[in-house]
Length: 236
Image 1 (cartoon, rainbow, N blue to C red):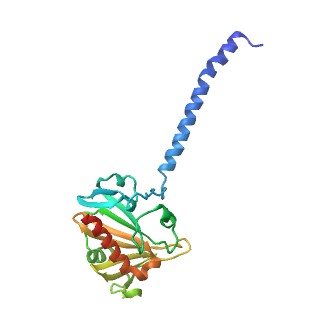
Image 2 (cartoon, rainbow, N blue to C red; image 1 turned 45 degrees about the horizontal axis):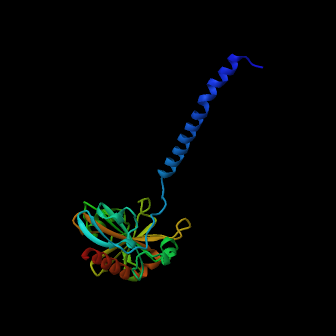
Image 3 (cartoon, one colour; image 1 turned 180 degrees about the horizontal axis):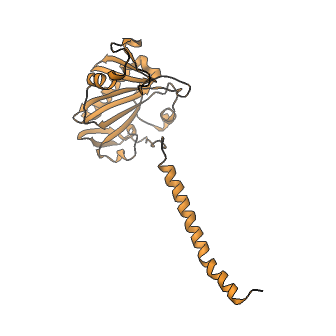
C-alpha cells in the first residue's frame, strides 16, 4: 500500500489531465473542420430554392428584380448591393429551380440542360472584339481562324498557351459578336462546357454564361435566351 504522499501526488496530476485532454481534443477537431472548410478545390454547391419570391438586388449599381429560384446563392437571395451574382436556368424552357427539377439542376451529365449565368463587377468593360484581340489573339495559332461548325469561326490555341485544351469559337448573334471558349472532351473531362466570354452589360458590369458543349449546335438559341432573360430581370 502506497504512502499518503504518493496518493497526494497521483491526485494532483489527475485533476488537470482530464480537462487538458478534453481541450486538446476540441482544438484538434476544430483544426480538422477549419482545414476541410478552407481546403482548395470545389466546395459543396450552394442550395437553390423552389421559392419564386421576387428579390431586389443591385449588382455594381445596376438594379435587377429576380425570382429567388433563379439565384444560386442563399446570401444573394437576401437582396441588396452585390459585387457579383450567379443565376441558373434550364434550357430551352428557361425555368428557374423547382423541387421537381432538382435532379436536372444537380446533375453534371454531358447533356445537362442547366445554363449558369454570371453578373460581376468588371472595371475593364471590354467588348467582345476587344477581348478577342487583346486577350486571346496573342495565344492563337491561326489569327484568321477557320470555318467551324454551326456557322462559327474556330480558332486553335498554341501549345503551352494555357488554353490548349480549349477551342475558341466566334459567331454573330442578335446583339453582335459572341465568343465561346469551349473545353475539349477528354478522359478526365467527360462533360465539357462552353463559356460565353464576358461582355459589358453596364458600366463596370459584365455578363457571361456557361452551358454544355453538347448544345453548341444551338448556340444562337442559348445566346438569345440568356440575353432576353437578363433583359427581363433588369426591366422588372
